[in-house]
Amino acid sequence: MATHLVKLACELPEDEARSLSTWTCSELARTLIRDRVVDTISASSVQRILASEKLKPWRVHHWLSSKVPRDDRFRETVNNICDLYTRKLRPHERVLSLDEKTSLQPRTRTSRNRPARPGNEPVIVEHEYVRKGALNLFAAFDTRSGKVLGILRTRKRQLEFIELLEAIDRTTPASVTLIHLLCDNLSIHSGKLACAWLMAHPRFQTHFTPVHCSWMNQVEQWFSILQRKRLRAPNFADLADLEAKILSFIDEWNEIAHPFQWTAKSFEKVLASVDDPFRRRPHWTDVFLRAAA
Image 1 (tube, helix red, strand yellow):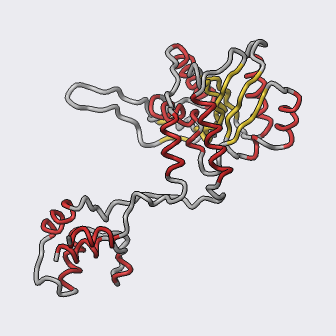
Image 2 (spheres, helix red, strand yellow):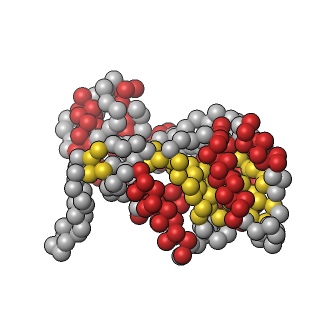
Image 3 (cartoon, one colour):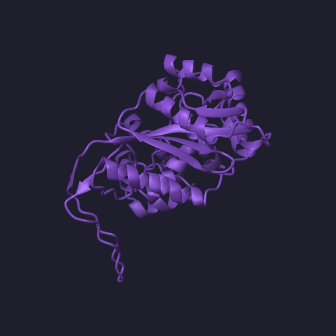
């Protein structure tokens, strides 16, 4: 019976004539009884058997089919990004990670947020809010110092991206003659206007992450910090207030800025899973044979 249960849990419910998205212990028990594998079995018994196989068929993870082949060119791109993040830079080099955090809304509440109180009372945020437009944060993260340069604009075009590039150009010493820019494949990063600006400023060199691999861009990691620490309970008076508070957060971050320590081993794991994204997930027959042994 245990072997049959493991086999059943490793199939999709629809393949077993059940109109379910995922299995639960109670539904597995019901199906075993329906198929006359057992006369009766409880959901808790099913759970114990599945636990012995470290099997949780109710869990769901999303994955994405790649639009570009994970071939030698992909490996070359990943290795290039790894090199930018991990090697020791020469004195005249900088590596900046660029991206945009879009649709940042003030979400003005009808009352102020209430602070936490003793007795396990959390911060209380008013449910009702008023929409007052949105801003887009254009940010550059220095991969060696961890410092951030950011501008906020109401639109997201090549013109605004060029404004960020100009801000980088103004604030970077002339002694830095090679600035590596790591970007994703958004069109504003490689449009005609952006390319013309980059051609006129030869110390800038762009590098692009593979398609659907924007997580390789370290500024995304910083965006998650911004989201958790400043934007988790938004309640800003208007767009100007939102802009001022985000810029203030950037200033405070830069006082204690630190880089993110990525290693070559992290990228080795990525490349190891290129050929088979499911290589760590054995087919149910492997589990079946192990259970029968």
